[in-house]
Image (cartoon, rainbow over all chains, first blue to last red; front, side, top):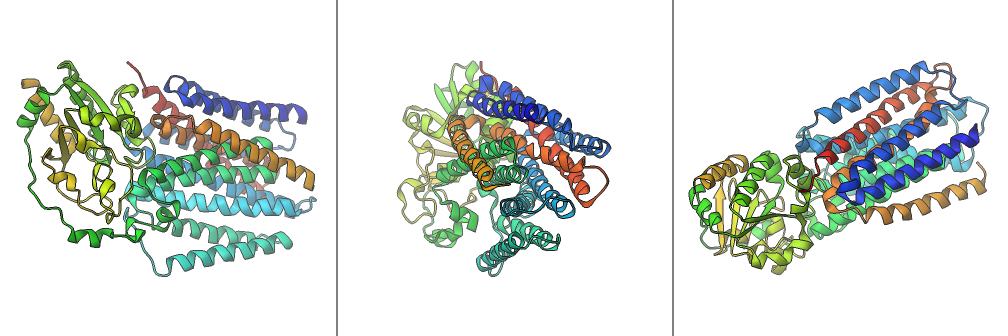
Length: 464
Length: 94
């Protein structure tokens, strides 16, 4: 029987690998996700046949409750709420790893098995990583949901405190490994790790959430791998390692998209970047006139264009403007105007956030072009419409060495013949700096809430 | 667990990380959100450990922790796969 179950675990591992492989194209992605789900189902079924399982009633209760909650979350969540949904799910995964490691420790403690050093080390690691993932993800969820402030939170002695906590966990961990007895110390480690998760994510600002969420995703995978070591189960190790790698790669992509080191993001906020910062940038206020445009004028400008690129940002998500934007695309296309979307890697609050919103609004994915593939096309573009994006189109990133965002890759929208920026006001973006693009001669500001403004524009366009 | 077995597990871990890197770098940016929620669901694989703990017989600390772990892991698994499917259904080409 044990041989059979290990063979099924192998099949499940292969399902996970092929499932992720199929995510390399939108055509096969759905099938890939289903394949991974099938792998999970196989793993669960074969585990239930394990002879170590004596009673099923508690299992059934747990599975039913968990599945119901998960299904309700998955069905109810709006697409704009996807970043916090992923954060929340992540947290539960990490929490499960901690609980399993604690349960295993208690089982060995009260049973006939003896502790060996490899098992206790991996139990401590599961508890630590899982608990940090749990509370860290809950705080990320809270920030994205608006329950916890999305601002960069600074608290006194932030870095020394975290280092001290981490050292305390290591000391306690080593003690448990050398002298495994009683739950108390391991529970203590659990508690401090939970606190550490809160303290690590609290300082991270809202627009840095793509990095935080990616990193936490990686942690939840690592926690699962550690649990695999505890249970001596290769399938858990493989599945966890895949997720860990995924999270790390996304984290690196996000950091590159902001031209910042992981350290800088984790330690919190642009202000700590050293050069400039919001206060310093204040002095170099860009001078010049801002030209604004109304819906009627803008409709006429667009009517005479032959190709248009739309650049969406978090503002589009906040205003839930994706459907109005889709209508805009349809109207322009009916006028034989070529419309594409330029997507910055860190637009929104999680990797790929804009793509999901636009897919929901039934924009075909082949119109969503990544930054590096569309940047050369801006000089040949008649009109660029920037909707709710700011820092990712700020030309200062290219030339102003004193700017905190200097070096960050941006969408070169200013090279287009006309740039239209839809924003509610001239306010600064997340980086807290002015955007000189607003004052460029080829820039037109189109003020208003994204949804209202674009709908108004659509009505005017229909009449032109 | 003896040292040899532990070493073999580390082998699998390291090799799987390399497989993961190879696979994930081929996922296009447009699918990064579904990748995240889908891989998230896979990390709910700890359900296996949770089932073993919760089914161990009479109600002890270990089984209670196992039951809570089942609830957590199932939220992760069911929520993750379902929401990913919901998203991927929407990705269409002309």
